[in-house]
Length: 356
Image 1: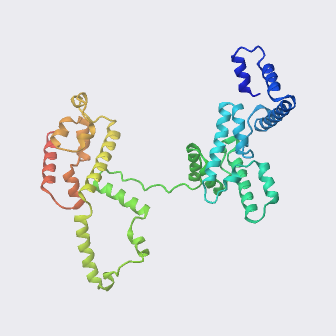
Image 2: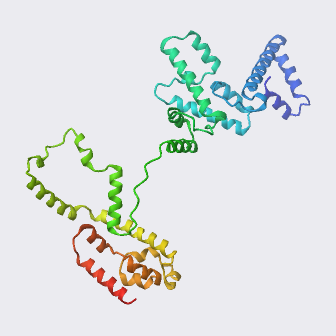
Image 3: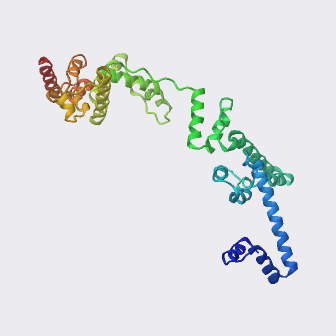
């Protein structure tokens, strides 16, 4: 009789539920059949003890679980602590990852080392190659994930194995692998930013970044199979010079859309805010504006008379060397096209500075 039946008898008040279950079993099944069931139970219990001795040698879970079958790991779970069960779950998760790869053999991934060796004894050709590939996978898993975790020292691991291991890694482990690759192949430093929070400095920064990223289509457009004939090839040098001059003038007028200009203006404003905060130790607002909860970022755009009324004396003096720029002024500097709105903004700024 099973454990569930013994527990049921205990709940009903039996003084010795195991003995009572045995007596009922002999009466129900007969002596010979009962002895056979008892022997089978002892065999199963012995096999389970042997399994647990291998899963938990010396009372601690094995450092390498790759050699156990899916069935063996499942049967061991009830006798494991929560942390040990997590180790088993991590190993099964890695097997699920392996099974999802192209050409994977789930029937081989779920076998124990012993069962895999038995298959190898009679396999040939592609079957033997698949078994060998699975054995290699297990060896790499145990090498890269000792005790179920990514190896603590990756400095001597070749890059092929690092790339292979990332598919099995947790997010934190993947970051460690990426950090090791960055250490070996440090990215080129970005171009130094311009020290000036001006339109010219911002455009210079963008041009330097474009050069670093190789975004000039002239560098790759020739790869197109449908590249049309270049009419410049039929021009004289004078005609090409005139065409270039006309293109430069047109480019200054149409290089930036209204949306692009506004996005770039927001970047410019933030550059000015950060530069002013660093230079003035964050003292940007007057006491009244600070008490009213004014956002200091708002001082760097909009009408000059509002900004100067809310700015600290330190910021007003800083603006004399680093003029605040309205959107209209910024677009004028960006496109080279004069505007009445920009002229009005410059006059208003000049009037405020003359009052200092």
